[in-house]
Image (cartoon, rainbow, N blue to C red; front, side):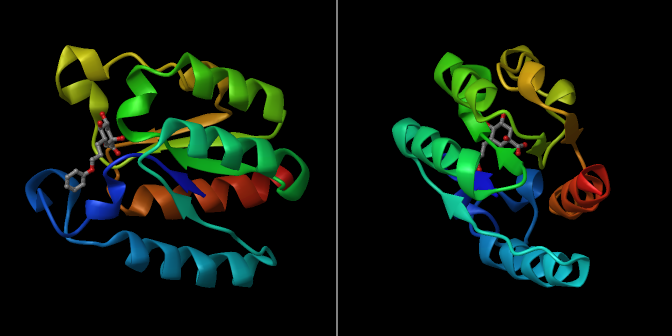
Length: 139
Ligand code: CA2
């Protein structure tokens, strides 16, 4: 699971938009869910685009799939789009908020064309839905 810029502030700032759950809470829940499904998960969050690209490149050989919330890079990053294309893995793009209900600049995603599935607006539960989907998708 890869999380982009500012998501380290989850549960700490702007709870009216992003909720009260912290990234550590989400990671603990997914680790437990993954164990039940027979998968091991690794987690990273970075505020730096290049670090996110390095993590995607590493996943290409180390992981069965990617759950990613690229945060603001969703709307700007051709580099993340290209990295996901090269990874050739199933990708679930997650957004806590319903980006389509928000400012027009959040309506376009450079990531969605590379995603197997997109989940937006389900809050922290979106990550659990993503993992459930990915596990069934992988069989
Ligand atoms: O809804 C989402 O998950 C987003 O990916 C979150 C991004 C935003 O730029 C996207 O348009 C939609 C922003 C993440 C910032 O997270 C914060 C969390 C707590 C406090 C401040 C920012």
